[in-house]
Image (cartoon, rainbow over all chains, first blue to last red; front, side, top):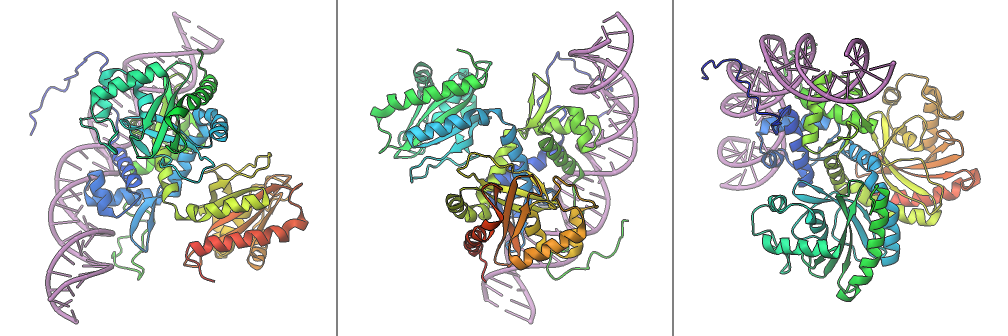
Length: 271
Length: 271
DNA sequence: AACTTGATTTTCATTGTACGCAAACTAGAG
DNA sequence: CTCTAGTTTGCGTACAATGAAAATCAAGTT
């Protein structure tokens, strides 16, 4: 029982905008449920509740509401939930409005035409790189990257590019506690190594994922900038090492650099 | 009408959900805001508030929460909101998990290879047909259909197919009040005409949009069924009349029917 | 069949939160 | 500078959302 404190404990600490000011808890929770479900792919009520960190009954009601709005689907047969059409519709609106994607589209296609490998477009979101667009290569072997999926920042070319021009503290914060998760023996797991790598990226103008994510797959990523000259996205090409040897790096870079330049120009970037 | 009738009018199917039971108002409103914004594309606070039918302050707080979660973006420059990356991510999860899309993908590609025109995949959602997948044709002329966009049911081939096997009352309900919106002189605007058209669809096995949506564009749609034998989606091909004459209808249908059969089979349909 | 176990749905009282109103700010336009 | 339209914040209250626990339901196990 809080003793009746004076009604005006108005702290006027300047402009400190409290992180979660004006935040609506219920909506926040609902979105957490939706996001958790998206990550799970397909899940039961209890699984979602656990993933979202909410009680079963609350999750039940939130999921039910999401279902009624079409953001979530429920398969009667199995009793499992999954993301619904409405979510897809809303997501498509993002793709439509997104200037980045339309600016990159044609160049990505011609890049794929020239190099024959799959091109990806990724942006930074909190602690991960999110692939927002992909143009598949002619080659049969399919690359891993899944649209909309998030990738760890420590072991992907796009991750390096997106962080390369950020401050060290920021980089450290986004990568989280060491050692970073490793996928292969080449994965970078310590901050100093990563920071040194970023220096290379700044010097060379591109980042390499040299079988750090998956053995047998090499990947080159370049920065895209807009009118503010900040790096807003990263373009990447992934290919099996058999078709992308170390010797080919300069050739790949020449082509990718040209594409990046064109796309950046469309975004308002000036040299 | 808060009828306090005993909650046990349990229907066998375990699923007797009352329309809005267990619905969370705040989340509902938040989702309405998100959906409205998706439709507007890019909008100011007041525009969204108006579209969602909510007060400015409520909308402000909901938008702010959506922004903090990444579902909505806010451009400082213009002060306008738009759909954010997070929405895209969640939507992509739908696409990934969607068995329909993966079942249809390869057949759509080969259909496009054979016919040279753009193929679309649509499902029914409330009162509209939603295009969830598209494979673009080689031809230069770009078709109208936009991914994730909803289409009116009265003047599209997919709309007719999706409703053809529904009861008349249901059809009437989904189409809303007459006269239906017309895009061209060929558009169907009255219920009796539409119901007669649905009879044709059932008899022929396909629906035609004969310049009903746009002059110069013809479109053929076929039903896709799953293991329940219900129509769960519709496949369609759109082409300018110059490349898709009435005489070609049988040829198109032969090809489309084959594709539909294969896709339906993948969904568990048995003849 | 009767039991067990675990998940889903509903009820219910309580609390805390989301809401609308209105005031305080902003920022353009005239 | 004033006006107007839009955005943001404070505040008190109604009532919406919540968790706990009870009631169902589904599926094994004996």
